[in-house]
Length: 311
Image (cartoon, rainbow, N blue to C red):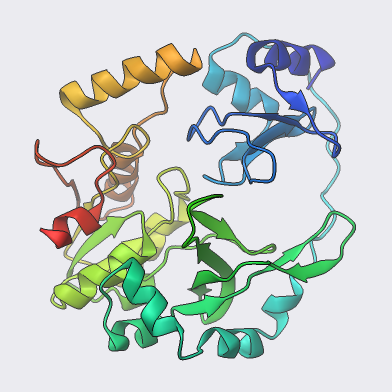
């Protein structure tokens, strides 16, 4: 990647440099504003990452998304240095036990109407999350979060936190977390399975409709190709893809046209691609029967499965 590529992207986005050598700007994928003290989108000469929607990649990929003509030249790539497993992932039992405090039931019910059995089944907790500073020092967050553990093949691979306050990001990941397909281990053979964004909505859905299964991806743009194979191995009857009713999810028709026009006017970049159809196609190509959920016209913008359940 040449310096010209970075210069072209910088001229387009106009990011503000920070003390870490990255450039901060509103995320061109999820729209999260770049605000001091909050996680957001950043880029530099090596690539980009949004710490909210987790979209990341090379400058070439970013240039393609922005639809700008940026020069690319071959570069010598070195094998990345191995990344050490986060300290809390090496022995998570102690941390998870802290999150299982009696206070968790009341704070979770203030967020969603979950039963005690559901909270315990999915090990939803409450407490402070572990983070690592740029100098390598670990610390615990000042505020407590609703905690959602992410398991894969019997191993804890991620900790996601839901903010109960009115400032800062709604969701955040503990340092060292990786995304996985939440709930896939609960998918039963020949069961109708819903695929949505919010982990808690998926749990709530299974609480209210135990004949169904549900999985969650954590955000419209976090889908990973290997998750289609993970679902195929569970042999569900049908997967109903039901991302939120917004631009990156699966808003359609006149609503999508309206939202796309508003996005372009505000950000001066093309609107994000609808991920719902893309995920449904990926499942079908993997041999999984998949359908797109059709949101009713009365559903508000950004409606999720929780809106359906509340009705």
